[in-house]
Structure formats: structure tokens, C-alpha cells
Length: 85
Image 1 (cartoon, rainbow, N blue to C red):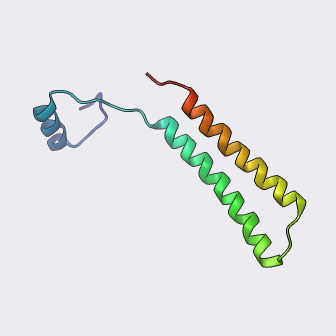
Image 2 (cartoon, one colour; image 1 turned 60 degrees about the vertical axis):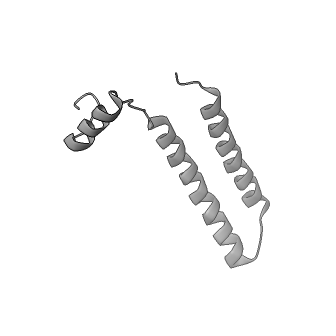
Image 3 (cartoon, rainbow, N blue to C red; image 1 turned 120 degrees about the vertical axis):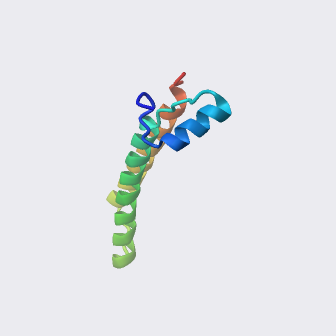
């Protein structure tokens, strides 16, 4: 239980009785990716809100949106390319 980082003895025992083993999966990279994509999404929403309130689209806004979307794609490609075995 200590190695797995769990405190729920009942769940640990049931899993061990049923399967005989537990696989611990590290989701830290996926959490980092989700956090970065969320930050980028917040930025995009702020730009869209400004566009909707002013009814004006500035070339800087479009450039910023493209930059943020490029960041999303880079993060996603990086996550897919790196095998974690």
C-alpha cells in the first residue's frame, strides 16, 4: 500500500484478491499537458470575449490565437511521440 501511495486498505485488499497485482500508472505528464492546454484555453476565451464585446477583430488577436493553437498542437505531438514504457 505504501509503494502505491494508497490509504484505502479495503480497496487495496479487494484488488489484490481479485487480480493478485496492482499496476501503478503515472499520470503526471498527462496532468501537466491538461494544465497547459487549460491555460491556453483560458487565453483563447479571453481573446474571444474581447472580440465579442468590441465587435472588432484585430490582427494581433488572430496571431495570438494561432500562436496558442500551435502551442496546443506541439504539446499534443510531444505527448504522442514520447513512448512511456
